[in-house]
Image 1: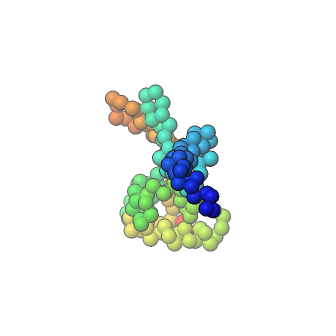
Image 2: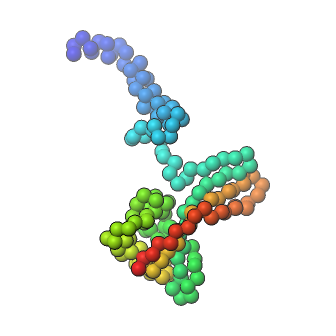
Image 3: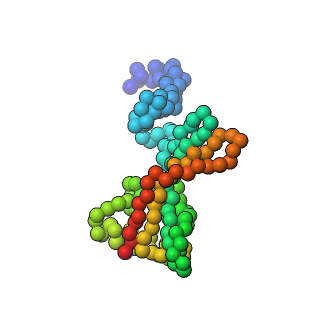
Length: 162
């Protein structure tokens, strides 16, 4: 150990620089080769639901939107994700559906738990608590000059809550 100390003190800035290269440069290089190679804990933030595709004149992204039936007149209305999931941030709606508690399941206990969690939230928003529509939409937004957003329905799922 005593023989190692002079080496460490003589090359401390070189070792610090090498450590910074490994910590700050290696993760983006790995991620550029293959997105699944991003180390954990990552220096880069994951794209998650905010991943977009860019084209010459537009930007494309995909969103998951929730809809429910109003209690008074049974009209299908959009549900704000922040209001539905509170205190969970609304941006987690897609994750909760695809990989979490709101996802499709055949387990009766999981369905009951989902119903017990969602029904009071839907009632609080003035919506029926029997079923809910989740719709995946592809949005194409022009880069400049136009303010029209073209939405295309990719898929729809009905969540039966009764």
